[in-house]
Image 1 (tube, helix red, strand yellow):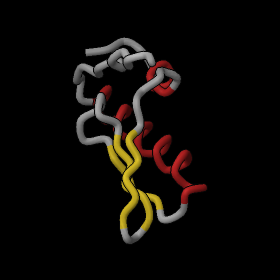
Image 2 (cartoon, rainbow, N blue to C red):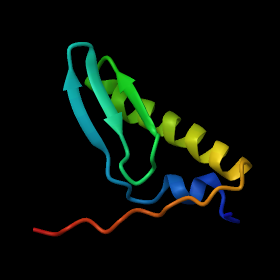
Image 3 (cartoon, rainbow, N blue to C red):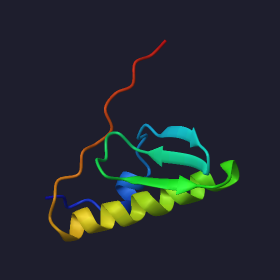
Image 4 (cartoon, rainbow, N blue to C red):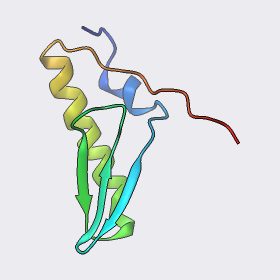
Length: 76
């Protein structure tokens, strides 16, 4: 369970994976299992992922589930 608000998690540097497909772009966050969305246009990706994250985080907090923080990304 977390005592942190959705806004705390929204500002963390979660990795975002974008996969082009025939209908646009599939988008998911590997550190947040089940948090994914789809955008038809590249310009919509940021808005769509923020919306998906907000909904996912809200549900997890309401259900009293633990929310993972981002895993460190390797540096070049």
